[in-house]
Length: 131
Image 1: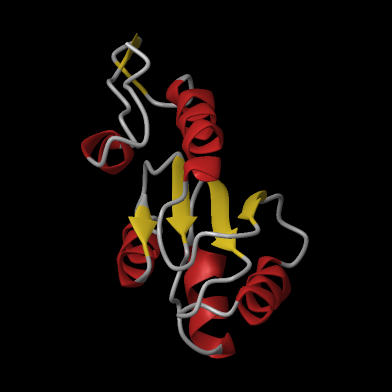
Image 2: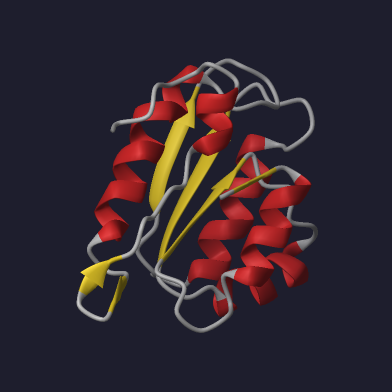
């Protein structure tokens, strides 16, 4: 999971083998060509979390760029009306559920490997770990 410019870094890593899910939160991904390049290379499931009143990442423009780049690929959209350029409480449970849904996809030697995606949310007190 990556937020803002960290979402761009997460998208780069998500193009590697064995990636099962990636969440991009208020993603500052660049122009259409950059978005196309990043989104087309991401492996596995993808969740995009956007805030309509984000003053850094334009909601409509970013959603449009990602939709154009995804070319019919299934994406999980998580949207909030207010909250600016930050991880908002409306994102917490959908992101936790997204991470949990990907857990079954990542196994090593037949045993599930710990898949923790929302540590930042817990660190900032926006959610409690589901364990």
